Length: 121
Length: 153
Image (cartoon, rainbow over all chains, first blue to last red; front, top):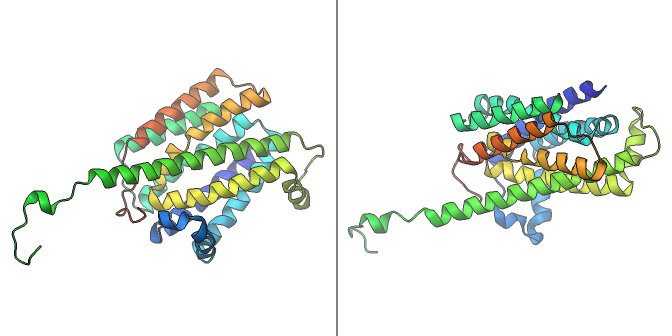
């Protein structure tokens, strides 16, 4: 049960993050939009974007799987192990989102992935 | 400036430093906010889940009822704030930057788990958190946004 939940969390998180990054880069939120008076309008705008709605759907799946994981595993295991998505998402960010992943950034992502592996031991 | 007037190099190229610093500060502040809401949200959720009395099983209704208990509700609210602030951050910075940099939250979660829940944090887990910290620092040294010009400032 524990590892099934981890798999569901990682898979849905990867899809949600890719969709969010893709869509938020197309229509960036400005600092001015974060002011209280504009916040409702900004949220309404976000709710009308298809890829973000789909991303929230995948995040909801991840959220409920995470709740289940917390009820059967320690917090100090549950939270770090879900970071397994970091390495996978870095590769997909390079391939799909065309981000420039420098050697230093690869090293950082690899270090985070190693950290996750140690935490899951 | 009149048309045709010669522009010296000093006049033509504005110093990028103030804008760069402002953008970095904005991104860094939002990153800190994203990490804080995530850590506190996870902590509240975990506290609520550990103190629930009934076995959840796989019933969706049980989970929905659980969401409206105080600690889980607080955690859910904080995680919604986290979601929205992280979405904004993803517009300002690369996905491959945001993920490792915000991973510092895993370390804080491990510390909270040990302090408040008395969870066993083995040396492997501490070493793992060390790797995550180092990885976050490495990625933090790279440019935040490599796919477009900053338009959010």
